[in-house]
Image (tube, rainbow, N blue to C red; front, top):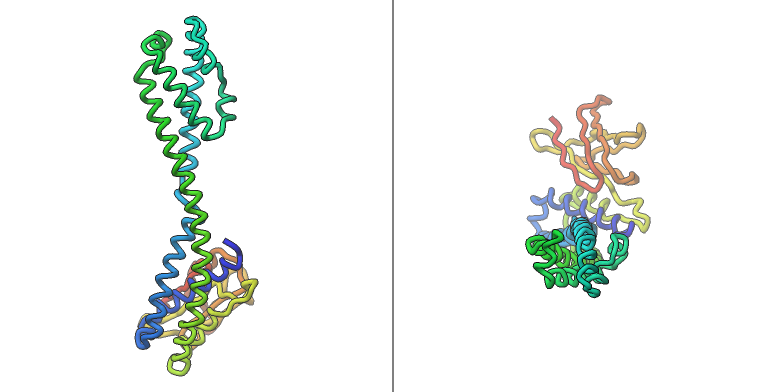
Length: 293
């Protein structure tokens, strides 16, 4: 995902959390509730596609590599046993097929390797029971065939995973466009309804909405502080770990935010009358709800 897309997605996530935590407010105005429902559905779909893009079907490639290693080991051992037998029995076809090394097997491309393992299996099976005298049994060939089938299936799943990642990238491009259109055409207008009645809710929404090309104005951490009675705490100083000067002061609605910080984990320290009253470990891109005991 491109850096700008990452910044926009962070904005989407924080807006989603902000509106989710303000459910009592947005439920009083149907246009905003409707816009939020559609935005939440879109955001959820984007999270799924981001997972598909980042790591489609995790583990498939590792499984395929392990299966190929096992097949190669078996093939090398079988060829070492079958090749002398083929020479002794004047079987030029089998002698040519089994005159290979591990290096040659490893050099084969996936489809070539898949073709060779089935060709060798069929050749060895056709020479039963003669090859049993050198240690190659029908049971061993049956187990080998099962592994070969697993490898072929994993090849298909790997290709599907790659295509899934590409499809996710294309879907995300359109979802970013749709998300910004939804905010601009519906959400922004609906939130304006609360400019007077719920000014703090309105202001926080527009703070989260601001985004520059470089992403420098996108809030990376935002949240709300309430007391144990559920009332917002105003005037609380929130300082971020690693900085003596970077701070945010909670608004009348108990809200705070930090913008120009790197992604990662941070410790937030909450001060009241210059005395630290609480702390919390948080991650960027998350809306924090903190209850002050």
